[in-house]
Length: 251
Image 1 (cartoon, rainbow, N blue to C red):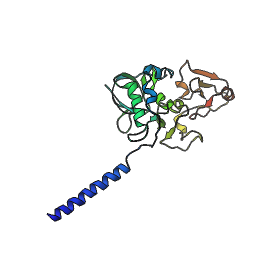
Image 2: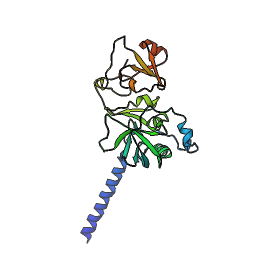
Image 3: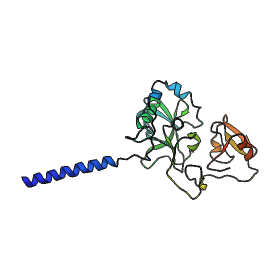
Image 4: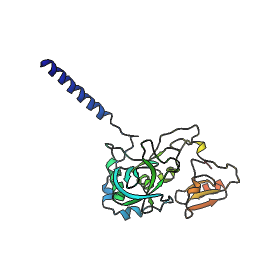
């Protein structure tokens, strides 16, 4: 009896030790956090929040009711399954800011119909979740999270979407690397991810929304909606009007 009791105590000690170690090294993702209180939004109506943002140029490919919000960047959509917001990352459970980002998405999505613009370059992540821009009443919710500083950019090519155009100075995180990089990009960009002409005769297009300009054949420039599209005759013309060069095609 004493022998069994001794080993039972030893087993309990081992279990307790493992629990302490597990808690110490709990998953925190990239470690991104913020200290924005949800009280900032609790008194605002959905319309108050949505009216601060322009309509998105993203297209609705799928529609369904949001039945569950996992966290600030993952939801369940009826008829689709689990959806991961492409290009953004919010605080993980247990990290400061987790509750606020999650409740922000709940406020705008839960039990409401949302639209999805699925990433055509990479439809699913390694967990089988659908990668998409979530559209609420014509607004890009991925972009809203970034501009409210409730999320950080997480650009993981290949991707149809370039979230740096949504970020407007928000925190950025890059989970990739390549041989070609821009020193002020917050990450590295593969030169194979776009095609462009570098000749001085090339025309340039810009977005009146993001104030970035691109080579006319840059895939991100082609995504600019007609109402936001502006054109320039030269690079210096774009810069003189306050536009910044695209970090992908680097005009």
